[in-house]
Amino acid sequence: MAKNITYETPNSLQQRNRASGLIINDKKILLIHRINKGREYYVFPGGGIEKNESPEQTVAREVMEETGLKLISCKFVFEDFNTYTNGNNFCFICKAENGIPILGGPESTYQNKDNQFLLEWHDFDEIKSLNLVPESVKQKLINILNKYR
Image (cartoon, rainbow, N blue to C red; front, side, top):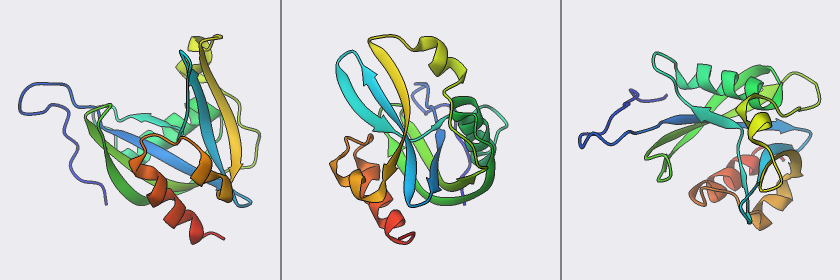
């Protein structure tokens, strides 16, 4: 499962580990479509692991904050190093209670014309054509989704 969480690197640069939810429903996955200062890309719902919080607790909290969806199951599927946060990203395949995702948390207050957070369901076949970041997770996600076809 997840390794011990480190909050500081040896050179004292802040390391930020995070947890992300791959929320699947009816052969679709929920992504956050980001439009930020002209850059367009997609990310998984998720966020930073807080002190004394497990990756599983983080993904449940972050998914609830960002989408309003409550997770009913969560299984660790892979770990990836995120160069943007200088930390590990723990990814979980998740099932959420039925409901319509509604943007919440800080993302809803930061939202403006130049900084958008759009919750979108995407068919598995669309993943190859999306600018999913970090890029290193795209092939891992495609391999996982092939098991759910």
